Structures are given as structure tokens and as C-alpha cells.
Length: 254
View 1: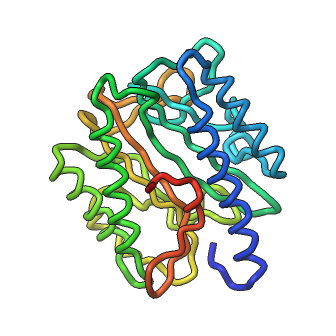
View 2 (view 1 turned 90 degrees about the vertical axis):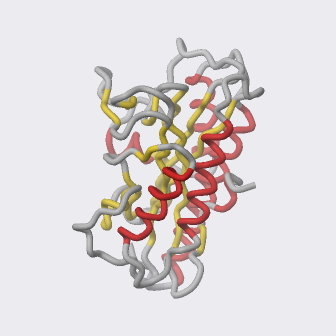
């Protein structure tokens, strides 16, 4: 969407604060021995207390309030009572919600407890690349140039990007135009970021795979060549200068 009046800005700020706060609280709440469903219910209760509704549930009928992916699961992991978290797990939580007709999206990967399996380097790379990409976004900048920044940053660190997952516009619905803010330089994409538009910018940084594929459950995605993936995401407003990071409260850059 494009912000055209004060009420829209306020609406986007409120829903963005809701998803950012929920993500941060879920990350702090996660502990070894806890099921991903228990963690999901915790996040769902926070959203409900804030008057927000789970966007994947409302939009797609997703079987959970948030997406929680662990280790080799890249994204869209279904919360489950059977999936118990362990020390050293690579965990990704993606929280998106609707509040008073506005939608916002954010997510982040982290190591649960001690970094037993050396995932932190991958996580740091994803954060650093997202930070650099966001700070290059201005009105008039080509979307493909931001993809180039992300891909180049990944390659310099010895990683790959997932080519069939992308950032997207957001605001009046969960996924809007521009629908393909890719993690690579799409030479056929001549679109540019527009002033006052709201977009969800996200990294998909992988150790081994270049594509994600869906498992038989119809939701969970894993790498076509295995390995691990880190994802970090902010919802922002594009300006003529530095973007406004609406979900800054989630603390993924802290």
C-alpha cells in the first residue's frame, strides 16, 4: 500500500508494533523442552490481547498463529505439540497480523540457548545483509539493485540466497505489489521503490540450497539441497531518505 494520510500511518504503526512486540516476546519466551505449539500459543495470545489477528490464519487458513521453523525447516513451519525445542536449535519465527484493516509482517532466526552447531555465523550474516539492504532503499531505487546487494553479501560470506522466496508489498493485505522483492538481481524486473509505499524486506540466506520446496504437509519448506537457512524481516515505509522501519521494536538488529 501507499501511505496517503495520517490515519493510514497510524494504522500501520499500530499493527507493526503488535507483530514486532509479539516476535520479540516469543523469542524471549522460547526455551529448550518447549513444544513449538506452546510457543505459538504464547504468541497467539499476545496478538489477541493486542486486538490483532494472525495474518496467515486469516488469509490462508494456516494451521497456527505464527510460523515456527526449526533447523532444516526453512520457513512456514507448522507449530506442533510433537516438535520439542532443544538447546542449540536454529529457530525461525515469522509473525504477521491484521489489526483494524492493516497488515504487517516481520520475522527472525536465532539460536536457542548455546550455539552448539555454529549457526550464529549464518544468523549474523542474514542480519547484516538485511541491515545494509534496508539502508540502501530510497524512492527511485530499483528493486533488483537491492536483490543484488543481498545476493552479493551472501556470496562474499560463502552463502547462497533462496531464489523462490521474496519480500513483498504489505499494508491492506498480507501480500501486495511489488510481489517479488527477490534476494538476487532480477534483470527482468525494472520496477523501482516508490515513496510512501509499505514493503516487507526479508533475507533468505542459505548454507547449501538455492530453492525451497514444500513438504507433504503443504506448508513447511526445506532446501532443495538441504542445509540451513536464516531469515530476517522488517516492514518499512519507503521515503526519499532512510526508510522508516515500522517493526523496529522486534530488536532483530540489537
